[in-house]
Image 1 (tube, helix red, strand yellow):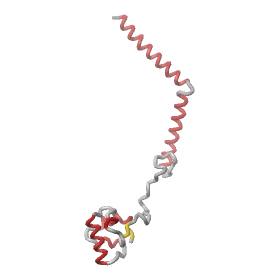
Image 2: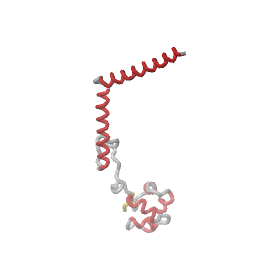
Image 3: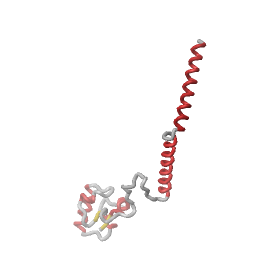
Image 4: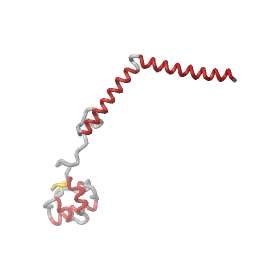
Amino acid sequence: MNHTLKNKYFTQLLVLVLSLMADLTYAQSPSGYAEWKAMQQAQDQQLKTAKNAKKQNVQTPNSANYYLSRPTTDSKSSQDRVRLNSATVEQLQVLSGIGQKKAEAIVAYRQKNGLFKSIEDIQLVKGVGPALFAKNKARLAL
């Protein structure tokens, strides 16, 4: 029994020594640890640059959205807007909260009462209130 216990400890000691030697060999090899450390430092620098750029709201080439910038929600181009006086039922349905029935009601109101004089006049259509108007105000045009 004593002999098997000594073999067990000897085996564990041998594994420990060999693993330490392997780590030291890897750390001293020029293509091992030094290469990894250089790559890790470069990666850390890229992350730091990206973090600083994000704080300053600057787009960097290393960021994930470099080629596909996210559109701003503040200003909509005239192409993105829905023209109340000429939009079809299908075009009106792209607005938030406007389904088939409300789009048809907007077109019917326009045919009955004439063209809208301002975008606020859409609230005169039954079913379109201030909340719905506020949601879509940035996307409306005459």
